[in-house]
Image (cartoon, rainbow, N blue to C red; front, side, top):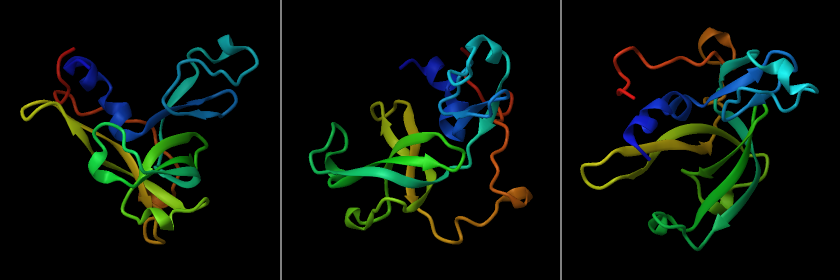
Length: 163
């Protein structure tokens, strides 16, 4: 992946930025510009609103992988799960900070950002979301007194690399 593309995709990658259709209220991750749920897709053009997912959800399904994909050899066994977010979208991610034998369907989890890989010793470091078990403390209401998602925010001006 080019460095320019990497920086352009930063808001979605590091904010769990999705989109919400202002017609049918369906939430998508990654964001979409057209809602496939609406009867007449063209009606949703220009009506998709950016939305920040809160990162909370529960394990919908999972697998414990014993044979690692390239780059994950040191992590076996590890859990790969489908996580149903509180906003609705289903995300695929690794479950971390828990013994794989303790993971179960319905387990509450929250997203966190972790290093995934780096391109050589002096290359770009790639981070991504993974999920960890939630405690009662993790599920307490956030800023503003609710766990409602907030609009996606762009990085501060000057912090993005040129395209």
